[in-house]
Length: 260
Length: 235
Image 1 (spheres, each protein chain N blue to C red):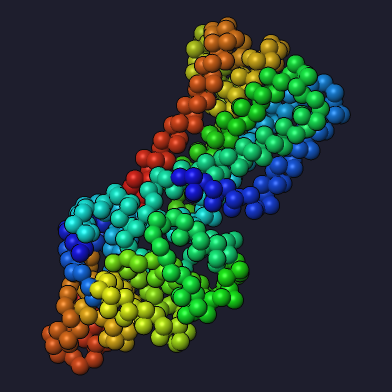
Image 2 (image 1 turned 90 degrees about the horizontal axis):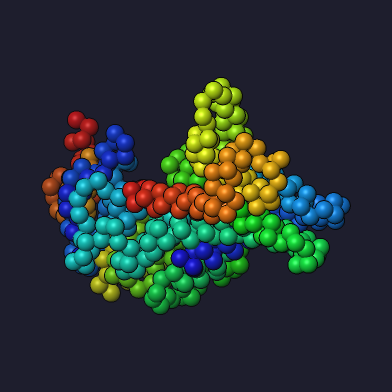
């Protein structure tokens, strides 16, 4: 698997998009830290950007890479390598290179800022962990969609729709349902509904850590009340892990019957 | 050497292979023929494990191969359309394939034979169709395997390269290897094939030597003999 991972990784490292993505985070990190001078505010702004942007980029890169490497994949399939090895190698190649852009792009400005003296190191570390999780989750979801659709345009469309749904529409529908069913006890419903959206879950995870109750919102407050800060933290991290494992598992299942 | 038993493959509602049985002995050149869409490529891809049949069994070197991957180390495959990752150079591609196969390769002779030295540093996306096909041939012949599968190997080749290809095929045969080739060029079949496997409606319609086919159909030319086989289909 590492051979494939290596080839996919270097293939992506050659594409200018990886550098654009890296440069974006680099600039963002520098601007937020050095013009703002308030680390915890910078972390919140970064959170808002990361939880929307990393899923989007992960989705687009995942789908694009899958379809663009069709030839590469066909070549590999004729070699004595297991199918799962090929696709897991490609999956980790894409995910790791995107995660690296994120971690290096934000890490460098924070190091330059003197992060290790700051008390915000844990918040910042969590931000990177969550961003990396979202990356792995959405690349896996994108691979799932691409595997199920032979047609590039369709696959791309569904992938973007998935992102739009989880990043924007889900929240809206969730809020509307809270308003409509105002008269009922909604604690459990909102807890469960949050688990089903990795983006919401990430947001709550960071806000729990930051302990800013004003920003927690309804679900966050319920979450905190229900689990307490540390249990909620561990639980949401675990569910994020499940969000990686289940799509990856489905990729492997799907591969068994796929014709190339 | 290869034993295909009762192979079934459907793509949606379209039945491509319908209980195909085929046995291929070691050594010799086998031409897999048949009209467009008769399942030649699907059969080959089933042997390679790229297409997964609904039912049936494939045995290679007395081992069932469905769902396995290591056996591909003993098969050289040349795909129909030379699709390569566009941003790799020819040399990088060859190195990569060598890296992925745990056996020695002799690519230098083949590169020289097809005059690819000047193309080695070029990206595959910038090569012409014929040059890509030559790279494809190098990849297929650079390993020493007992089974060589060629899917439409002549597409886009210039006459000199074609002569080299035929020589390569003959040489492989003289080494006792088995070569499975699909093509629509009947003169090539007439020239090199020891045996013909004719696919029709997802089954083997005819299997035997070229002379046997000519005899059975009562035609002198292979092209006409094949056309004769096909005619029966359209009547």
